[in-house]
Image (cartoon, rainbow, N blue to C red; front, side, top):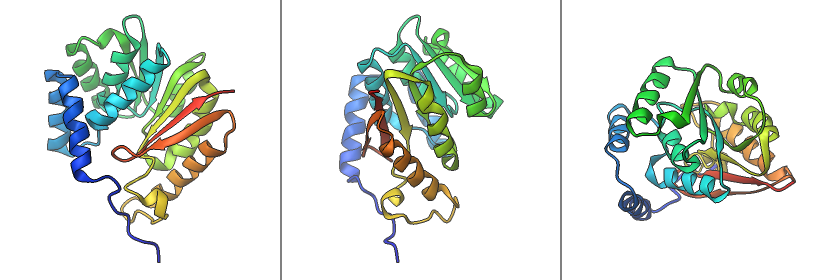
Length: 220
């Protein structure tokens, strides 16, 4: 029998990372987005991961980012900070209300000109965009992760990044334990992680922050 998935980061360490992230940046719009997530149990990456996404994008001088799964714009907030004026973050989400709310939040945060939403299927949105990206970020329903990797990896420039949240899935990706509430999710995430690791064009690792962030740098 597989061991039950257990927390892999000490809660005190997680809280400490959040405290440091909060010290580095304050924004009433960001706080509003976080309050909404708490109230409605809406999944967002949180400040520690948000800061990681921003730093990764800044480290490669990213100017063009596409998100596969954007919700109401929380992760896009961090990418929009990274790309700077004249940069572009393309968001995809199947819910038009999320797109409307995200546009509103990011506009009030002074980042609206850097962000554009496509409402509909994430991979369809990716296919409709031309050219290569500095960053492809994946956070769709987890059974879609393998297909997002297969499509996204071909659209990343050399020296660009593929980033993906929930790569550890509460530790289930390590143990192989199925998620009874979301059948197929554990298996899809494990397949995704294996596919990334096997691709010799990318140097990759999973940063064990929050629920695990896959970081893959295209080197060839």
